[in-house]
Each structure stands twice: as structure tokens, then as C-alpha cells.
Length: 246
Image (cartoon, rainbow, N blue to C red):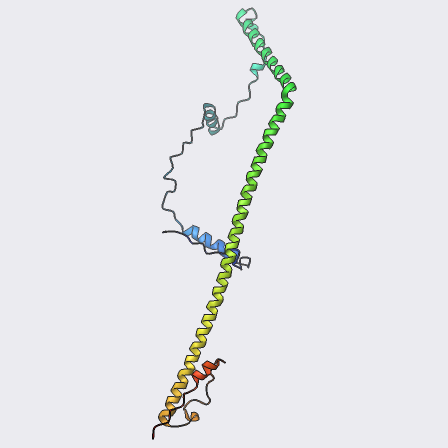
């Protein structure tokens, strides 16, 4: 898949994360990547445009306008809780007195409703509060169960990841040891080949000149042949010449 990122880090196996300078180097790499990265695609183009006025009511709009105009907030009006008499100029006006009486009756009904609510709360408030607390405790218990389930799932994922990384680390170490062994063996084979080539060259020279082993020019002593294996030693020794027929 194009653009797929393969994460090859094994935090349970890799070492050296706590060494000084590692965190700073990683943060520097991230900062450099964010500085060089210039997105050219709008990742929100598949979404509809935002409707910022969806939840605005008339009151909220007026409040936003007040805040934008830097006007002070209006003080809470307590006029409906007052019982004012008719103004002095309308003391003999029946309509003004009727309005005052209706206001007083409304205030009286409001206070009666409050008293009724208080009496109902005294009779049934404790039971209602107990029911509310029971429902609240059930919600808390369900939330705790969900939280425990999520923590258990996270722990299982972490254990599974640790197990996979541990197995992968053991396999990597085994492959690394095998690679080191093969490289060392190849080096030994190359060294043995070099020594064998030198031996072949020397015996060819002796056969051609008819001299002895010490007569080879440029060689003061016989080169050492690595390896204690009898097969390798036998293979390195020169084969005796067969007797010529008379």
C-alpha cells in the first residue's frame, strides 16, 4: 500500500532509550519533520461546512451582541416580586388599583406554590433523593465496569504485544548470532583459501624450479594454516607424486 508506514521499533526489546541525548534527538527529528511538512490536501473536505449558528437562540444572539459592543450586563429585575401601590397621580384610578390587586394576587399564588413545593419536598424529598442516589450509583457501577473492561483489554493488548516482541527479539538475536557465525566462518574460509593459494603457488614454483621449500623467494617460513580439523589439515597437505613408470 502506497504511503504505508512500517513501524519497526520494539520498545520491549530495544535498548538505549534512556541514554542521555536520545530524547532530545527524537524531539529534534520530530520538530524538523513538522517544519518541513506542508500539507497540500484539505482533510476536512468530505465533511459538511460548520454551522456555527445552529444552537444560537435570540437571547444568546443578544448576549453576543452585548459582549461585542462591550456593554454592561443588565441587572436582574425584581419588579415582579414587588407590590407597589398605584402612583401618587393615580390614587383615585380604579384601573390602577385593579392592576395592583392582580399583581398582589399573582405574588400570593406564587408564594402558595412555593409553600406547596416545600411541603411536597418534606414528604417525598427524602425518598426521591434516595431513588436518585440509587440511579446514580448504578450509573457509577456501570461506568466502573466499562472502565475495568477497557483496562483489561488494554492490558491484554500490552501483554500480547510484549509476548510478540519478546518472541521476535529472541528470533532476532538467534538470527543475529547465526549471521555473526556465518560471517566469521566465511572469513575463516577466505583466509584458508588465501593460504591454500599461497601453498599451491609455492609448490608450483618448487616443482618448476626443482628446489626445496626454503628456496621459495620472499618466504622466510611456512605460513600457518588455521583450523584444527584433521580433514582441513589433510586437504591442505600436498599429495605425493606418483612414481613414474620405468
